[in-house]
Length: 135
Picture (tube, rainbow, N blue to C red):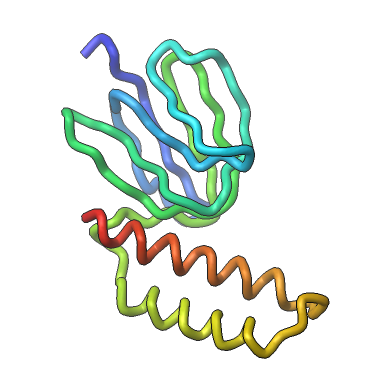
């Protein structure tokens, strides 16, 4: 298709995805943004959230963590700490992580040095649960 572009989703451990897509939506640190072929060049921060792309008229979902996105008119590169495709997420494990994080936060003071780390864990677990439901 003439309207396709390349998408790479890369983590420190692996190439989570590499292929041609029609569009991609990214949870940017300044808000969600969509990319189509021909997009203006862009470098953006990526936040914890749901990334999805369309390939052959089928939408695929990933739960991703923080990182960066580089957009060119023909390619999008997503560099993140973690990326999990919806059908590979262990929802029960994510629910246990969410429960643990909520219990820890309930006992913590916001000034605790570990508060931000636990809050980030909670955000990731909530995202993983939400994305797992979109198999």
